Picture 1 (cartoon, rainbow, N blue to C red):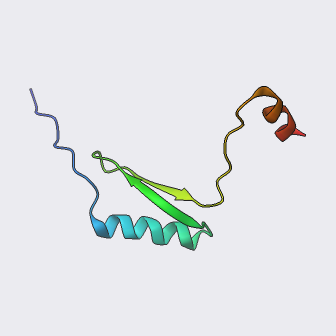
Picture 2: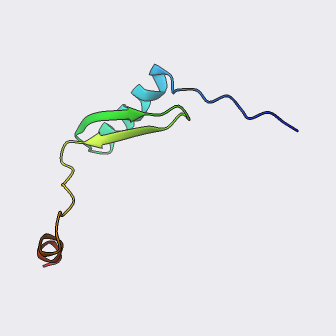
Length: 62
């Protein structure tokens, strides 16, 4: 039986590389989330809010 690999948070250099890559793709980086499994999520300032009701979802499709 093998032991589970130890989870680790991403390093500062990995986070900076992800932010730089997002900016190079034209994203307006507003923030980021990091997780213990090495996950880095880049949040964009222009991200739209999800529709809160059926009418808004229908209106967005027009």
